Image 1 (spheres, rainbow, N blue to C red):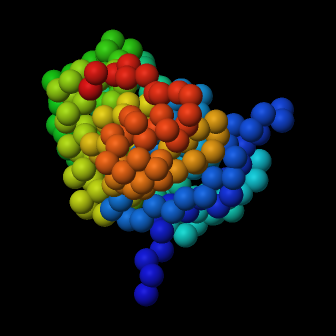
Image 2: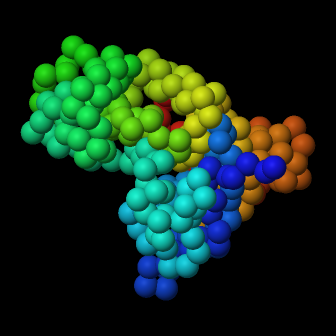
Length: 254
């Protein structure tokens, strides 16, 4: 019996005033798979993620999470999702510990469960020593760690990570990469967006090249080289061949 895809995108499309930000995107991601969206800034990665998480309605098409339509069955679909946006959205007048307690309450967790889970995640993210500091005093990297901890509170089966290593130093980025791999081994489906070639290649079981709103190719790095007509080519060479005129900027050394 076939396994229900953790994530299914069907002809997903978004236009703004006639401008096609995402065009007819079709994609299936299985449980335990890490899928990387690779594309230049403005290619449509974040727009796609926002439609997947239910923050942005598609012009047409649909998103299914564990078989549940994000717009027809939002509660069931969103219960399965953990989302880390490209810019962390946090209540900065709360301490790290208070914020996680607050979010656990929103998820419907008991007080005891929420507090225990908060301590577990603070330790996992290396934030225990800063747990009673106001979030407004955190660095960007610490805020991103808080966003990751928040996304993991309810133990989601689908993780959507938008440029998740941005703002992290090399050590923190390494820790997050290791965590992503560990989550996938536990059967969590992970979709991450990045414009960093090395991150896409290191983490992803499959890579999707998104270019001007279209998914123009997807597969392993070796399969992308084949699709580019250049067997054995590097991911950079495949990207250039398939997109024709642009290469993502390697702006993040992690």
